[in-house]
Image 1: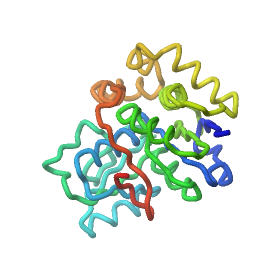
Image 2 (image 1 turned 90 degrees about the vertical axis):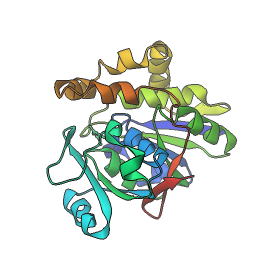
Image 3 (image 1 turned 90 degrees about the horizontal axis):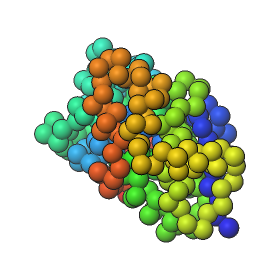
Image 4 (image 1 turned 60 degrees about the vertical axis):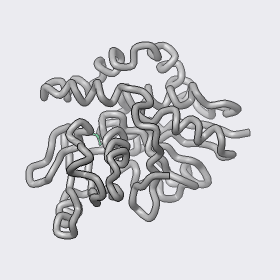
Length: 233
Ligand code: MLT
């Protein structure tokens, strides 16, 4: 029997949770959406970074450096963490280093997985189809926000569970996530707009990112972690 489980914040993640599993890291607003968009725009790879200082050093090694804190671009970096600022002209073929508040930290915690995938609404069906074809149990790792659960990541985890076949939901968190999606599946954007993170981004007049990250299957690719770099499967 294949199992699916949900971890609602990366702070709750125990290393053992990842072993021998497909792990899908979800940070809808916005790290996983941004990473998907970067690889969809044909960057060479995305290197997820925890600390700002480490990210900044890579500028001297030919990287585009991107960093976000509290939802805003960090001074001294080329870009923040906005998927709508990414264009193939500037990014095609480039090495990218990305440091965000939660999402990149979550990714770096999953190295003991069988494989670590990046999931968002943008590549929802690609992720679901991949998992349904594999014969492994799955952990859906929501990044959350500074140790708290968030609505949009949990909603996306529920949308993945909703599409899985022949999987047993292994926890109440999985049941909750699926129920949340079932109650909101026809109005993802409207539901996301109620989230604390969407309110934070809206307060910076950044509605465009929320709308962009709420769209399903606009970028049918699968980013995965290989030797601490994110590339296309
Ligand atoms: C995060 O890592 O928590 C998010 O990606 C932050 C953001 O982009 O607003």
